[in-house]
Picture 1 (cartoon, one colour):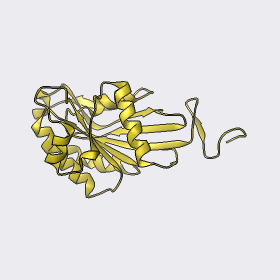
Picture 2 (cartoon, helix red, strand yellow; picture 1 turned 45 degrees about the vertical axis):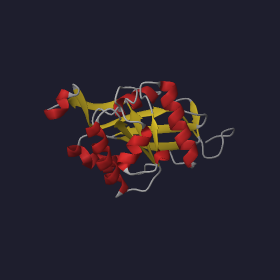
Picture 3 (cartoon, helix red, strand yellow; picture 1 turned 90 degrees about the vertical axis):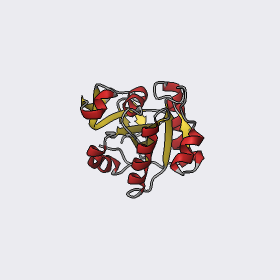
Picture 4 (cartoon, helix red, strand yellow; picture 1 turned 180 degrees about the horizontal axis):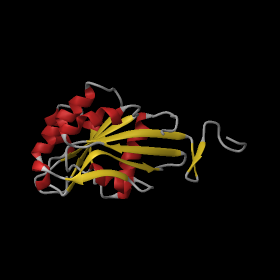
Length: 195
């Protein structure tokens, strides 16, 4: 890079970037993964949605079959790549592909759906057996009547409650603040640009 740019930085989309972070966004069907990525992304999101079939069709019309990808710039100099996984187990081969080179992982879970909590435990264990990176569980739909609190979700999953927070994936400010706080707390270091 020419004179005047910080060492190790690049210009992508007119933004000076010296810190690129890859985050996997995973969780059960209908937990809010695509919504979170669409809410946070500063560029058009790449989605691989297809018509839902089998029991998923009862929840929503479209479902992710390969990945969602968005990029956001949550703070000066940081480019955050978000890779959303499919929520169905039959696409679990994509979970591992998308996790390659990841610096952190977000698990989304619908706090109002007991089956979602059971399924996120399976997904959490699946990733836990394969990778060791910083993680955070985001409880969505916690505003619905009967939804479990983050502490209740942590207890059901048998994990440290400090790793579980409520998050509304539809709220740009709340979602961005949660994500930035998590990334900064993990002290994720400067990374090479992801292609």
